[in-house]
Structures are given as C-alpha cells and as structure tokens.
Image (cartoon, rainbow, N blue to C red):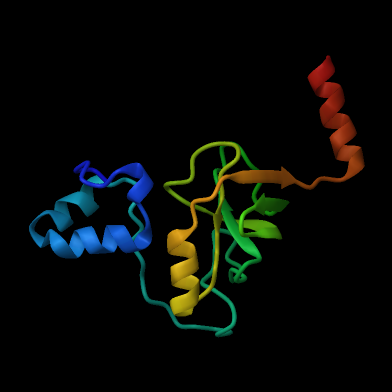
Length: 146
C-alpha cells in the first residue's frame, strides 16, 4: 500500500479492506495516491451470468476472461493459464492499471461472495501461454532468427 503499512506478503482484498476500514482518516489519500485503484460505475446488467463489458465491449465471462498488459500481450488472444489452483483457457478481453509485464493477467472470477473471495486471495505464480496458429508461430520464429 502507499503508506507501507502492509507487507507485500500480507496484501489481499481482505487485508486492504481491513486496513482501509481501520484507518478511515488515511483511506481517501491512499486510494487517490494508488494509480492502480479501480473506480467502478453502475450500469444496467444484461445477462446476469456474464460480467461487465471489457475493453472489447463484450461481456466478461467468469473464469473465461482475463485482463492483460496491452504493451506486452495481444487483446482477444486465447491464453492457457497454469497456476495453483487454476488451470484454464482464458481470452484476453480487458486491461487493468495494475497489470504490468509479459506474464501477468487478472482473471475475471465472476460475481458474488465466492468469486470475490477467490479473486481477492489470488496472487499465485504460474505460467501463461499464448495460443497462436502454427503458421503465425513459424512467421514469428523466422523474424526472431533473422
């Protein structure tokens, strides 16, 4: 956190919420100073089984959509995520202010208490594979060896 009061190993959705509630006088300043803080707006819900639209303006799918760093990864591409506890095929349909780097992604867990708990506690390391057609991989490989 901006104030340095939480150790990196302690940071989760629950610990951040707890700290903000325990320090109401500092909460606003911390949120304003944190460039990755997400502000939400209310919008009508379409299909209640799907999420809000991502940057592609398509509703996000619980455990099927993820946000990526556009500077490093391709929007709309399929990615295989291998981490504990999740092994899944996800589509990059959104971006996020706190997502920086090649092998980083933010998985959309969906709605409700379980989704919030799962998302808030997820900070596992793993592997991220982009899936591309063989022909594209061959062209990219030739460009790297030239």
